[in-house]
Length: 263
Figure 1 (cartoon, rainbow, N blue to C red):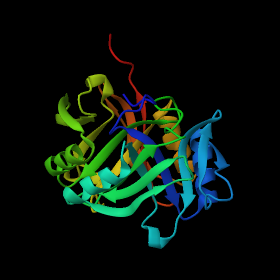
Figure 2 (cartoon, rainbow, N blue to C red):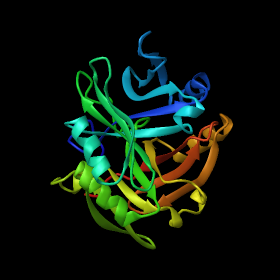
Figure 3 (cartoon, helix red, strand yellow):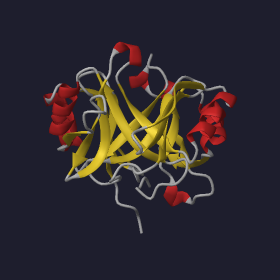
């Protein structure tokens, strides 16, 4: 499960780049109850989405030169420079070189060998998000890729991630966890774009899942707020009820009401 007991290679931050920051604040505030707090005058407009005073994500306004609007998932790295070298050696791309973020930590943004963007965060004063797995916060991440085996090998080489398979109705699911961790540390999965009709023609990407108390209610709220349903609410036995959505600017994300673990 995704938690704030961060370990090397696990997600520890997430942020959204939007062409309309005020519109994004309105949408996600209406959907999840998030409030926005600016990071200050030196942060270039960057700020934090918070829930009950705890940071759940970051947000910033972006332009066309920074790529399409999207959520970016960041993974913990003990050494940002070393991870950047590992990305190049694994035939990925360094999109933004490692940089210090006002003493809070070091960040960088890359693309894997199939083009899916992702980031890394080397903790400083800020270790990561304040909450994960609770309603209104990040609970799972999923890589949608054109090459499941190649992507798995890439993230193993770069972040030390390990994969395992779990049975699901109609097939198996490739799970991700930090190196040497047990199954309780599984935080995400890898799926083929060819298995996702709603993603036809979409480039490889990481899809964040946010825990919610009622998937159906959130889907209805997303449409009311100007979002789009990319995959209707669907129940998966042993997992939960989930839906794939997009905000008014086309930024993809998912929501899930997880089933309680079986004893």
